[in-house]
Structure formats: C-alpha cells, structure tokens
Length: 283
Image (cartoon, rainbow, N blue to C red):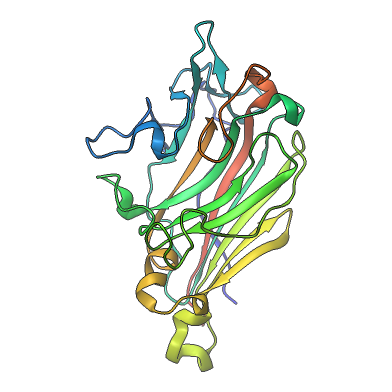
C-alpha cells in the first residue's frame, strides 16, 4: 500500500496570530442564501440564522482552535457562521485513496437547552459551484451532524435526485446515528477508497467504498455495488468536493429554537484541525 501524503490542512495555530480563519483556505457564506437568484432561501433547510463573518460568530481562539458560535440578539435574530474551503478538488485519484480527518467537539449545554442547534462538518461536490444548483446530484458527504444537543452523531450520503432516487432523498443514506458525547473532543474521519485489487478491475467502481470513522472506529460504509450504474457513483466517489463547517440554528430536521435555547459558547462547535491526505495508485 502506498504512503498517504498530507495534501491540505488547517491547524488554526496561525503565527502571527489572526482572529479569523485564513482567507487562503476558507470562504465565508453570508446572509440567508447563496448570492444567485435561483439559490433556495434560508439555505434550503428553513434555517433561522443569518450567517456572518463577525468574530462574534467565528474566530480563532487563543488555544489555536476554530470556534463557530451561534448568537441571539436582543431583537430575537440568530446569527452564526458557515465556512467552505477555497479548494473544491478533494478527490481520491484513480486507484488511490482520499482521507479526511478533523478533531472537534460540539456544545456543552444540556440537550434541553440546545433545541434547534445543528452543527455540521460536511462536503459538497465541486459542480455545485458557481451556480449553487444541482443538489443532490452533485453529491454530499456528511461527516458529522448533531441535532438539538442529543447524544447521537449522524453520517450520511446524499446523491442522485429528490425526492426518492438512489440515495432515498430527502433523507439520504446514513448510519442511523451512533453514540456521541457533546463537550468531549472526538476525531472524525472519512475515506474514499478506489484502490481495488487487480482481480476486481472489470467492475472497479462497484468495489470502491466510502467509509466514515469516529474516534478511529468505522461507523458506516457504502460501496459502489449499492448502486445500479457507474453514472450515479462517479459524482459521489470520483469528482472533487469542497469541505464545509457550520452551526445552523433551526431547520427542517432539528426544528426551530425556542425560549429555552442557549446561545454563545455553550452551543458552539470548536475545531482543532482539519487534514486531508491522498494515496496514489497501488504499485
């Protein structure tokens, strides 16, 4: 097996210190939708927040971590932050592998004070840009979603078309959730493996896999054989993606925040690092 090469990373330990994450690495999503006419309002999920690039919502801490912090203003408006990598070419090379990893933690508040809080670490297919259309056909990898502070983390693949389709939209194909402890640091991993053996080359795509990991243990896997044709699998496992971090407030899945929902550090997501490795074709 060839060695993995670290091809991209952000450790958030900038020297000299800077308050916001690197603009060389990240794009800030702002407002309540993408800046094109056809983009769905409220980020397509009936979310309640307005995304900003204010240090009140997103900043690099003195400990060298990234904090994304929802805030509730005195007039009842929620704000938060959503970031995308500048790069949109994260992909496993033919015959090789892509591995993405982050160490992060979600909010420390009890679940009965986190109604509507929705942190996520995920990726969208590069073809979503620049028109911000084509979901879910462009493919979406959800590495981590935690809703309402509950002790469950979800990993999901979205693809094909909606409603229905090969990925059972709008739900997607997921692991149904595994145990999660908010406030504790966890390692989230994801691998696209295209390194099939020689005797599998005839239908190589069927033997390729996506694997999700939590603290080093595999929590979910999908192979190309799940699908009827390579045209469905190609945007999922062969095309470039960009990475995303956000903490939404409200939405179709968690429901809207209520009078008991806390804002601030108690419900923020904190990220220690994000790293991406690639391994080339088997020798």
